[in-house]
Image 1 (cartoon, rainbow, N blue to C red):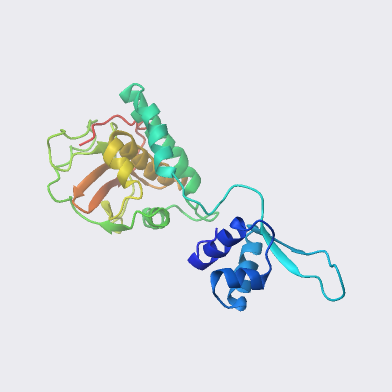
Image 2 (spheres, rainbow, N blue to C red):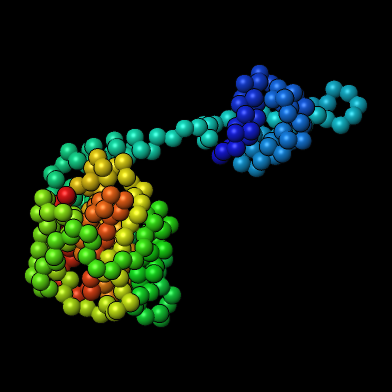
Length: 267
């Protein structure tokens, strides 16, 4: 992708030239040693950004090697993925809010199932092993996860087991996205964290603007990963910005309750 500033400069010199250039000509235009230019030209050829060919000889001696930019879009140019995401989300948010939230959560679940590394064949899906796989996935995605125990600061008490619940009141500290069905009894052990602290959000700008979709999508991603692992636990709630620098995903033993619908209230 020509990420090196010097490599980008070599590429720009070739792009501005009216004809293919040799190593010496390129070095002269940049004011650097030919060996430096040769190194970057070789890298650009390997990246398929530049073509190298022998110039037709007009006399005795070895044909001169010249370089030219390959036709095509500049793959090293600026990207606008955040704008693209905002454009797509703006269409999603124009739909029925409840339906959009449900679709966001189910999208997260499908991607969670796809992205997580499954357990090896015949390995029993314990809570401890499943959480380790989940933490690895979240780390790869840039969430900087770490296991945590106990309730998050300012979090309202959990509902009694067995009672279906909506998410906490919007005005309650720590309120966030919560599954509507209680997971019931399960087989999580003492080595299983009650929560996962997420110290970074790779979707931060979008979560700040469209948290009503991004946070359910993130909760669904965690649920889908645990489902793919056939884990004996699930994620029941996501607390966005429970602390100034952290969100919390709450884990609980999985049971036979119906699949969560994604209904909830964003804080």
